[in-house]
Amino acid sequence: MKNKTRLYLLTGFLGAGKTTFLSKVLDDLSNNRVAVIMNEFGKVGIDGTIIQKEGMELVELNRGSIFCSCLQLSFVSALVEMADRNMEYVFVESSGLADPSNIGEFLDAVIVAKGDVYDYSGAICIVDGVNFLEQIEDIETVERQLKFSHLVIISKVDLIDSKKLKQVKEKIREINERVQIIESINGNIDYNFLEKDLL
Image 1 (cartoon, one colour):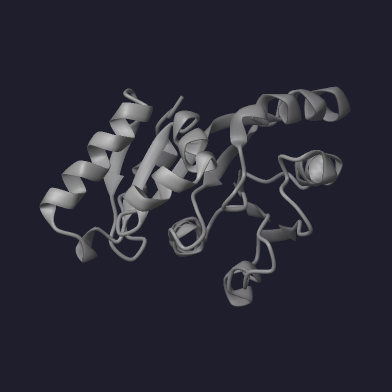
Image 2 (image 1 turned 90 degrees about the vertical axis):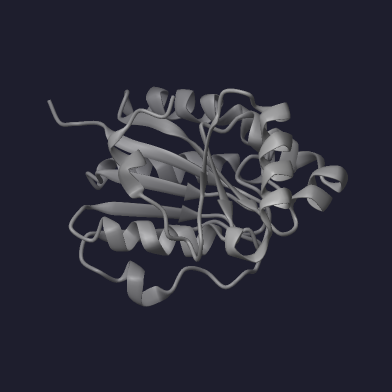
């Protein structure tokens, strides 16, 4: 029986550093078969040269959020299509305003179409260390993304002082007390989370 494809969901508000993070992960996994399903609103996508490596696949789903009804079918179709391509990892980069609470429904739809082909390995939320405290006051989806995350990466920690970093961590803990939090500068982190079970 073939191994299941590990599926990661990547969330975070616009400008938090999702694409930078993903570029580094793809570099790290350059010897693996990796697919990326991107869902950004008209934003410049991932650098084409990264994705054109052998064994890399990219699907872009624009015109709405993959978690709203307008793109649900496209998202499920993309997941089903990736299942046929025998990928080791699939990363779904959702739009900044995505609410990931219903990921389970999508995976159920894929199971109906293709069987149990994905090992959902967790939601990773990138938090903008500089702007997070303002965003969390104004944008409800930021809170929902954190609530459903299994790993939080605080980006741009080199641009804030230790007091602000502490406040950011405290606020994250208020919303999700169990989530693992790590810090990142320019998307650089220890990618050993790929070996761990985040759930």
